Image 1 (cartoon, rainbow, N blue to C red):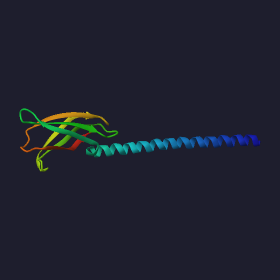
Image 2 (spheres, rainbow, N blue to C red):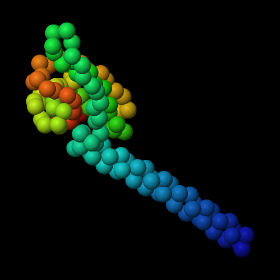
Image 3 (cartoon, rainbow, N blue to C red):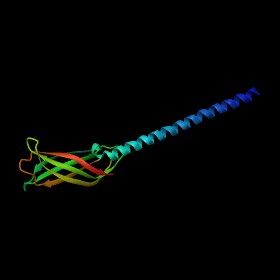
Image 4 (cartoon, helix red, strand yellow):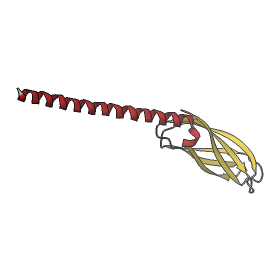
Length: 138
């Protein structure tokens, strides 16, 4: 009789331990999905924090300012598209001379980059260019 009681107690104990691990695994998966959702929402709400633009300018033979830049998606989950960029032209003293808007109509996956090139007739005295991400769709 003691033998059967010991076997039954052992089975119950092992079953209880196994169920606890399954519950723990499910809880960990739920936590991961919740964190992933939160990260995705953060990336969707704050596109300008996850998209960087780096570029430069030069003059062509027609006197136009040619702006070449790379747009990089630093997000982990969200793919951005139709990125709107404000391009600001500054003088040597950093006075704002003019601003233009450029939209990059491409999908940019997480960790990926794309290139764009635009031509502008900028004001006399333009020395440098600045880029600000205005918006993006996802």
